[in-house]
Amino acid sequence: MRQLLEATLTQVVQSEIRQVVLPQFNGVYVTDCTRLVWGDSGLKMAVRCEIQRGRLRANLMPLTQHDQRAALLEEPLPRGALHLGDLGFFNLQRFRTWNADGVYWLTRYKIGTCLFSLDGQPIDLKSLLVGDDPIRLTVRVGKGRLALTAHLHAAPLSDEALSKRQARLKDDARRKQRPLSQRQLDLMGWTLYLTNIPDLTFEQAHTLARTRWQIELLFKLWKSHAQILTSRSADPQRQMCEGYGKLIGVIVAHWMLLVAGWQQDRLSALDALHILRHSVGLIHRAFTYFSVWAEVFADLREDLAPSPRRARRGKTPLTFQLWYDFEVSYA
Image 1 (cartoon, helix red, strand yellow):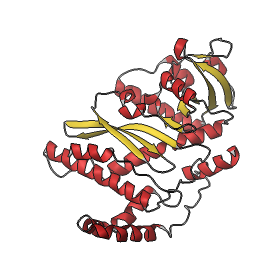
Image 2 (cartoon, rainbow, N blue to C red):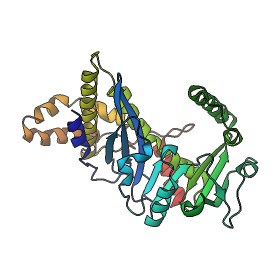
Image 3 (tube, rainbow, N blue to C red):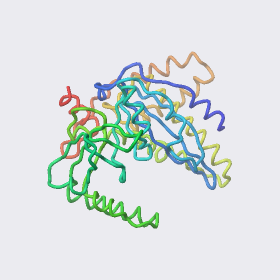
């Protein structure tokens, strides 16, 4: 079953239609890792999702292997693409390579990373981050051969957001049995991003950073709704085989939705999956009679087509609304 899953992961399927998601970039790539554990056994899965066309790339690795060693990180990105990743993928050497290749990147600032002014003077973030206004500064990041030029964006948190962050960091420190450092305490009230994209405002940088959560939603879809980690069996081997099978199923379902013309600004991934489930009987028949596939996709396109554009929300905008606003302000 693992070999079958690995064979599935070598296939690349993408939508023929480039979705209207941040068209300023030649692809929007989000990379992250997720843990897949069944009983005492499990593995880690590194996933790279291209948001505009829905293409997925993934590879399996041991649970103990660091995210930075994921094989798919070595795959080159096209010039003009944007990469988004969490702090587990913060790597100055990789950022330097992307700068040279014309690839855009944005990441949260990693506490402890040395920052310098363009004339080489060290920057004290504690003294820099004062007041209530966003800060934008072109800086040198890192030392020696790893040093590179980037743009620092910073803005203070609201009181509500600060309270949530304090609770989360304290909970993390409790679980890791490691107290918060003085640097963490000094920077706790600010959100900081580093990027090589020129002429961004903090709001635009924050919109791009929020886009990274699309891959977290994908993992939630797999684990919470497709229940790839759930089994009624007490046999760990059977649990793992069922998990591999379910994972193959959700990946194939993702491919089918892309081919059928699913647009995420019109229908959420969960709602699209519910529509696909209505065709399970016909899909099962198509695996025996290949001529039925044409009927499967015709029906699926017909079911997806009437979906209206998703309604806008005023108080807490959906991510696709922020994409539209980004396009207008950055055009």
